[in-house]
Length: 330
Ligand code: SF4
Ligand code: MG
Image (cartoon, rainbow, N blue to C red; front, top):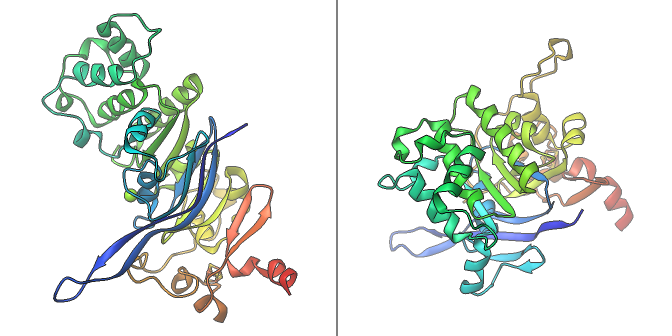
């Protein structure tokens, strides 16, 4: 099926303020050359520890943060440098769901008012039902009691509030939803309910998701394909089955080894990652992962690995796999 979103060499750099006189010196390369495609109706998961640039990637795609370079084509249209007025029109087709919907729900407005506002933005001319009825239908769709329409956001639980956040996002009939850690603040028992709701809505409405999480268990639950991010770059991308059965990048291997396995007979070695993600303001030279990588060799400390295509939908950026490419070049 067709690609809804094509991201090519996306870069988002932030100026770094440094020095006594506040002079600018250098950049934080929060997103440093990210490329991927998302097909209509699929879910691409982006996983990585916090500080890897996942959120900045999502916001840069939606043009909520201005990217420094690269291309973002949505539905065949280039979003970067798109005039503001046109971008505003496109906005209803691309929605974002946040980790904490509470902070983005106006506490003075009832849920009915919040949703009516969203519904009128995405007004579909064919829908002639009274607004109140449409609000009720929307609440039912996300599993909330329509009789609670006149309550305020604080009167709902965390999980219910995320349902309101989802309702507001789908009210405008979007094509793409960027979900940034949408279940990370919720109890584990509630997480699965929200993920299943998102899956149902995806099927019913033909939604495409870019789903961002630090939690590989959550990513596994929801994604069709998975991109693993480390310090502003995608280090591996593959379809879900392939990534879990045959993880190639040492960072991916470490992340997967930390996900609990239901079957204790399939016990695997836990690869412990030492330290935190280094500051993107001062990333390691060569492969940015090398200080934490147990396979690092000399070349990893000097040369940044390029992407190697390992299969029909499997790309990795690591010197361990660069062999063929280099011999081809020779
Ligand atoms: Fe490890 Fe080197 Fe591969 Fe980086 S390029 S992940 S340091 S083996
Ligand atoms: Mg984040």
